Length: 220
Image (cartoon, rainbow, N blue to C red):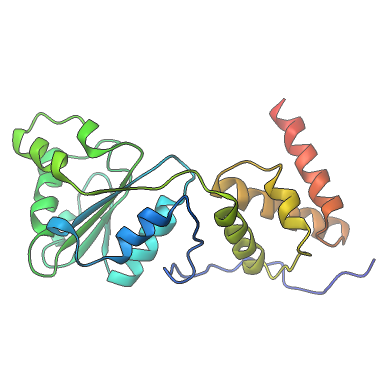
């Protein structure tokens, strides 16, 4: 069977709220992010499980707000004054004094702070009473495991980034059988792309079935 000629090199797509795949599972978090800059105290925390799309949404906001993206060691937090800041995985151990400083800066002119985490700030450990009160008061938006609408959206995006246009029947087939996270979607697209290139095969339900069965064998 002839296969459409395409480039196999994946493209990096700039983060964008307009391009973010939306559904019921992330509607609350998307609405909260889009309310920027009218966040309470200039802060917002996106909370959800791994693979739900927190980082994708946060990076899209960072691009929109021209935010400073800081690491968890907060070594570069000194440059945060007067500009929005993104800190991911904030519940996985950050210097408490620096985090307290970032939260305070967020309420000032030109500031802002978006945090991502798997757990709510009220559960984060802190021995600093002032930080404890700040964490307890942080606004939170939840993002759930991706629903079918979100997963189909990200599948289409990942395929498009690789210049692939599968037939529509491939998507419900994958959605009924694949893992339920955005990294799972990215991995299945990568494997389909590689398998198609190796065998000069089109991306069809037959190939999708083969790749999914191989995944099941690897998990055994």
